[in-house]
Image (cartoon, rainbow, N blue to C red; front, side, top):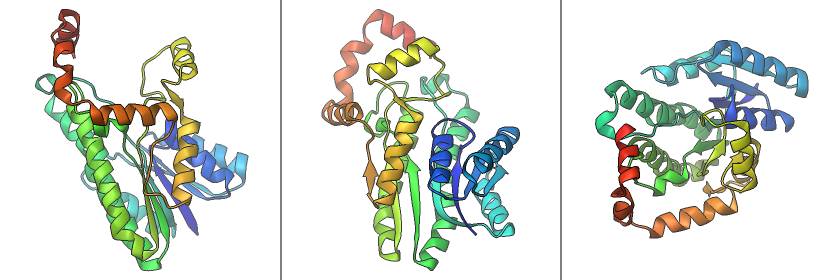
Length: 263
């Protein structure tokens, strides 16, 4: 039986992807490190959309996480014809103040495990001559600014990796789409409901449903990349033009300097 596998799908954008795919009649595999939430989401999707939904616990930080996910899918005869690499964590702070294990964690979740998943499931898709992979990068790919050294760099790797795969897999009949969202209203941001509403109304933040809708539309049209939202497109264009050293005068402002020292 064919399935769409979505990492980080117990909440946020991943949950939006899972529900929108289920609404399209696709069976889904819910993957995250929250076992109870996985089961609850899978049960809700089965109830609401009448499709098959499997719950799969995985700690994407583990060195063998991708291999374990792949093996479990094989054991359950679940043929993954859509892979959505969505799981991610936010990290803002100066590298000198960052714990080494935090570096290992974000690198595993954003880089190592997604690349392995694409290798394992992508090879099967190429052998079958069909399939789709969607990789969630970020507009921070173009923002190599202070406190973003880890998050932006790992998302940049994902962005380059995904677009390279588009060229590698296209002749096999496998589509690869990389999505570069800006700020998204998800639990990753510790904000009040009032602030979230204000930011969404101002267009500074997009909802998870909006981002997922844009991503799936691009994926099913076999587009190489997707930048959701008009404001995000403008921000990306500006970031491409604005060199990092242009921020130096801002960083010398005493209040900004004190804030960065606390991160």
